[in-house]
Length: 355
Image (cartoon, rainbow, N blue to C red; front, side, top):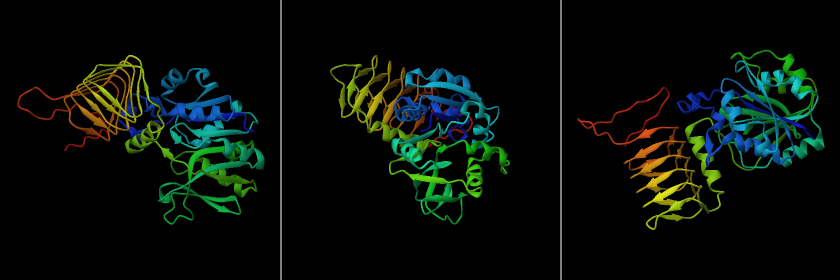
């Protein structure tokens, strides 16, 4: 039975800029809760208590959000990675923390619906040197792909033009002590990183048993806007109706909606599944399905659905917003200046799609 977990939360999240210019990608919320928290929940649910979190330049944000891990029933230790030198490098620098214990390694921006229990039980029963989590995908050319023979992994291929299978590696692994020898033996890849796939391939080539476990439920690598929105939809679809905020007689809530304490609805409608965060005000507005509005926002005279609005943002007089990710403390409102025109203050890597 693995006794520890290694969670990787040091990436810079370049594909989610500009959101990640000011926040860690692992803290982008799904249903008003950071992605990373779902990872920590999954680890705690299989009985692991000791978790090492690899952090980088966003370390203060991660530490502030997770703390000592007590909220999750975990004992968290932070391990600083000076630069993003690969998943294999994460194992290398965590050697003293991990000691000789078997462990699970989990990318902190991955979102899984399935429990890890059967994955962990299989590892505990078969005792391979490594076990990798796989998912059947439509286009395996975008992923690392596993070659399976008689239940064992006999090879890994990174983004192959002619894939040998449709089984993609999804960023959750289990290892015994042999992985430490493997990460010391490999050399950096062409992009200057110690690749965990190279370390697993080293295990295979040195007669270590590497097994796989294929998941059936949804898996999303939340690295892009559309992936974040897809994961948000999945989480919102699991909501139970809970109305703790206030609403006037002209407002209504339809379906599975969470209105958190301190939220206020005035002449507004929320149609679930959706969540409205603490301290947020909806005035003369419509919030449609699969939308998460974080805390302390103000939406007035607008319509929005299939979107995520982060903390402290203000949206006024806009019809209609869909499939959007709106960052913290953002403002979207009509211009009152003449001549009438669109006026933007747009950061690096932003996207704007106009009707």
